[in-house]
Structure formats: C-alpha cells, structure tokens
Image (cartoon, rainbow, N blue to C red; front, side):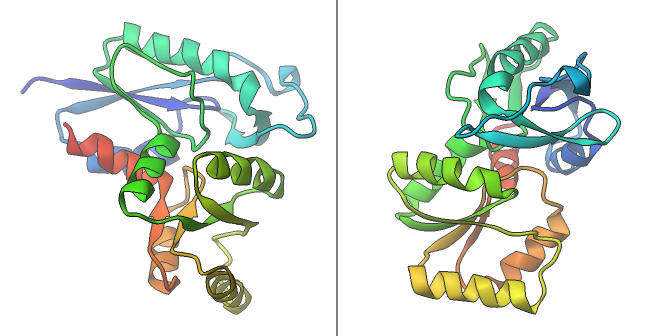
Length: 221
C-alpha cells in the first residue's frame, strides 16, 4: 500500500490533535497526516496585540492556552508553514481555519474552508445566510467578507456548547426575521457532537466550514 502524505495547516501551534482527529477519521488508511502551525517556534509574549478594525482569529498555543491573532500577521507565517509541508512531500494540504487567506498558495492542492464553503453555498443557490462567529470581534469582518462574496449575511456570536432554551429561541427568531436559508459555522474546530446537535435543532441546513473542507479533501483521495 502506497502511503499518502497529507498536510494539516493550523494558524496556531502544532500539533493539534483535536483538529486532526476528525480529519484522520475521514481519510483512507494509507494517509499519513503531517502538521505545521503558523506560530510554531514562537512564544506568546512575542505575539502582537490585536488592533481595531482588523480580522482577529482565535487559536491555541502548544500548551493549550488560547490566543487571538490578527489575520494579516499570520499570512506570511502560514505560507512558510505550507512551504515546509510541501518540502516534506505532502500531496495535498488542508487549512484548518475559516480565515480567507486569499494569497496563501502552494504547488499542490490546498483546501481552504472559506473558499470551499463559498462555492458550495453558491452552487446551492442560497443567498441569505446566517453566520455564527466564535467571538464578538469577528462579527464585522465576517459580515464584510461574505457581503463582498455576494451574500446577504446575518452575523451573531454564540457559544455552541450552550445550546439551551435561550440559544434555540434566538436561533429560531433570527432565522424567521431574516428569512435565513442556511446557517454557516464560520470556524474550524467545533466538536462534532455539538455540530450534530445544532444541525438537528436548526430549521434550515447547517454548513460547518471545517467539516465541509475535510469532506472535500477526503472525496478526492
């Protein structure tokens, strides 16, 4: 059996077993996953503070602590990490982040959750989309990029781990008032049981960008 090397690119530090485990479960047995992170080799104290009117992204350091980093700071470091993976011989790489990173490119196929999600939603003919952000600071930039992509977005922040009666009531109201045609999880890393719970609750289709990108990668291997 010929081994296939697959790259897993994270915006924080590798390894990220929590992100890689659901990916591994979708891939053929002959696939081996190589990981690289944009913040590998850095310490938390060296990371820049987030400025106003930027696109902040949440991620983790190797010790499990959370950090918020600006997308533009990560761009060059992500490219270096991708180059490293390709030098190691990966045949394809998946970006485990919902950020746009439009300038991130490699020699081999690169699966970006945002780009894949945008194409799928377009293909389904959906336009009025609800987007759940992981942190309040992401709402404005998320709204802007989906508007730029041609959609009519409604964006709000919610903790998917707290799907109580209030959560469900807010979800139902937002769907009805804004006539939403689908819900999009603009994040990579929500635990699958939580996503499944929300999918069973929502009155419209639910699209998890991370799961979608993993399924797209798996389908071509």
